[in-house]
Every structure is written in C-alpha cells, then in structure tokens.
Length: 242
Image (cartoon, rainbow, N blue to C red; front, side, top):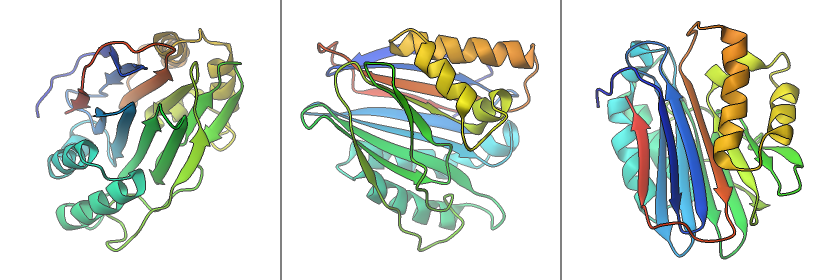
C-alpha cells in the first residue's frame, strides 16, 4: 500500500451523496486512512482511522487493519458491528502498546438518517442545510486494539438533503483548535464555509495552512460527505491509505 507523499483532493459522488476527501502525510507515508463505500439503495459507509504515531510509524500499523476495514465496509455490517469486528483484528495484529482510533458512519438516504459509531476518534461535525453545526460522535468506545473484547455503541441522527458531515483526524483538530473538546473554531469555520463538500474542505484546509505555515507536524485527513438533492453518478468506492 505504498502511496507516496502527495496531496490527495478527490471530489466523488454516488447515489445522491457528494464526497470531498484530502490526505496530507507528514512524511512519505501516512498513518491515516479513509474508506468510502456505496452500499446500494441510497446507503453509504464511511470509515476513517488514525494509527498512533505519525508518518511511517503509523503507516506500519495499517496493513493488518485496512484490508479488514475494506471487507467490513463492503458488507452489511452496521457501524458498531464494523468497529467491533475491526477491533478484534486490531487486538490480534497490533503490538501491545499500539492502537488505531476510528469512526464508522452509515448514511441512509431513504431513511434520512446517519448512524455513527466511534472508537476513540475525533468527533465529526455536522452542518445542516440551514448552517447549524453540531458535534457528533462524542460517545466513544476505546481505540481499536486496546481492549480485545470491546463492543461499540451507535448514535442515530437525522440527515437530510443539503446536510453535510465533516470527518477529520487529530492532525486537523490539534492544528486549529485551542479548545479540543468544544471545537469552537472548527464549528465556526464549518458554519460559515460554502455549503458544499468541497467548499467545506477548502475552508478548513485554508485555515490549517494559515496556522501551520508550511510545517507538517502530523498526518492530516479530512473527509466531507454531503447529501445532495439529486443523484450524481454510480461510483462505488473511494479509498486512501498508505
């Protein structure tokens, strides 16, 4: 999985969802990954993860994790079941002092719902079509690989046409925020950004660039999902892992 250091900026659409994703490794390889898989019937599964350690150190942990995440994302597993199964894989594959944070989200266009399960990962930010912003995924289980028999819970939120969700790794959060729990700066950025997936990503990454001024302190991954008012294309899979 040796994708070299480069900026990945991908607009992608399927079954009424539009996705913008960007991954910036701190070094040649990143310890971040994301998977976006269309499940048919207006459902979309998104998995984002962050291995402990930056660059090569984090990337070295992913070969045992990402293939299993890909299998589960393509199955009918719920977000909580996906993380529970992925945790078993991580507990068997990772060294005892290593872990991976992750979140799994299933978007259902027919039911107008978003189901979220979190394994120690940065919470997501949801923006409504009316620019109201809230934090999703504060209820979290342990990171993957820490507790072998851990199980994970789910939260279900309404999600309608024009709504968006921003997923990120801690390289984004820690570079921009002063209050890591409140996420006030990021919430304000999301509230005032253009109301589409690529515009939201651009606004956050521009703020990140202003803060970092060319430095690469950690891997940075940002994935934004927007439910659109009309279906756009039939792509089935989007992925980035090093």
